[in-house]
Length: 408
Image (cartoon, rainbow, N blue to C red; front, side):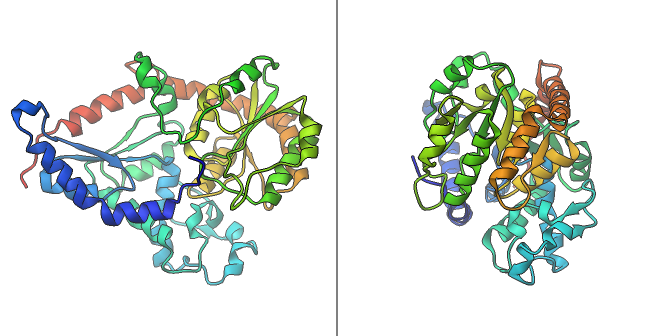
């Protein structure tokens, strides 16, 4: 499926069209005959941005848990979209504010748990002059509706986002941190379940074999996720930045990575890097990041990628593109000490210098040290039946999902 996902259309469609068929599905399940051996629906767990399910849960009198797949810091930033709208900070007064440095200098006060957060660090939908911008309003409303859930689940762990989780706990129903999920899924003994995934792209098994021939901590892994798109010019700048760094790299280039055209790197780049670079269309990222040859990760700062890098102890170079990736980038670089950001426009010299620093510089070494410390804490939070995430999952089941039905 070599097509970029249309996130706004998907969100608009689910919010407008899914409640009725969802109700019908619940009714069908609950009206099944004993011969069908179908138990009644006693609880609902849904994606955080599918809050239309809250209405169905209320009608049915069953608890509903919203699973927010963002970081806690990204989620809290979305919740404060309402503040930005009420204070008339968003929409922006002029489109020039997106490029003139205003986003970098405008500090938003009054966000508990998030000190000195710049407007730049909020999820990307603040970058609009349109009061009717769909995604800004959609996330503003969806994040507020989380307050109506029976509980909220977030894919994180307490020590990583402690202050943010404390702030969220004061305004939301009970929060259960269950994560990193990438570490939890690896503990599933059923190998058939481990093969389940949500990737839309076919993975290239050659990547791991290629890495087996490389020295430990010698390879830069480059992957901008499943949604990020860039211009052809940006692709070329990334390519030559990697080439001029003289470091070995594995670069995942989706067929639709370049907006509106094929993702084709210069033939001269291929000639220059043929002995130390591998290009592939997709891979099993968690396995790649845990390979001993990987020394750093050039990423779009999506939450799954960020958590997988933390769980693998791999430092990052951040190029955020979309949604709360900006917030994740801020925390990776400023709070957790595991990342460096590509500031401003993508230029080959910037990419070259950051890759060199990541792989060989003093800052890169410090980032690697911090990443390994966070990895240890992630493992502590998710490994074994007495870990934080396992206990939280048990509590979620007992305290919320198996709670008695309410009267409708």
